[in-house]
Length: 140
Image (cartoon, rainbow, N blue to C red; front, side, top):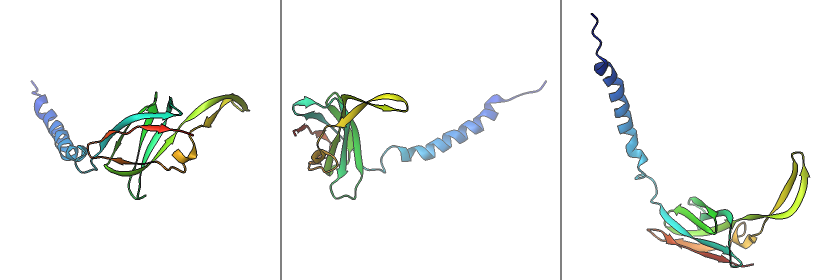
């Protein structure tokens, strides 16, 4: 009769895998990266919630990272390092006009948030340690 020891033959690969995971997991806990802070708030344009768009927090000194979050239903969430940021807010909406393309008719969208809030932003905000709420009430 042949004796097969499954426990012994399985344990070496399993132990090797556990050892590899144990070596690499400590670097995945975020401890060695920057401390991110949750920032939330609302985004309104002309007193109306921005239905859909994007918000970017760009390091004010131009040297740090850029953090981004989706705007949905006038609300956003972004994870950022504490510090000073230039803020860019982008959103587009359908115009009711159509163009003919190879794929057929496509509805034209327009960027309706003025450039002073995105490509030529004048918005600056400070993200505090621990994060918090930062709201944006934009006008023309």
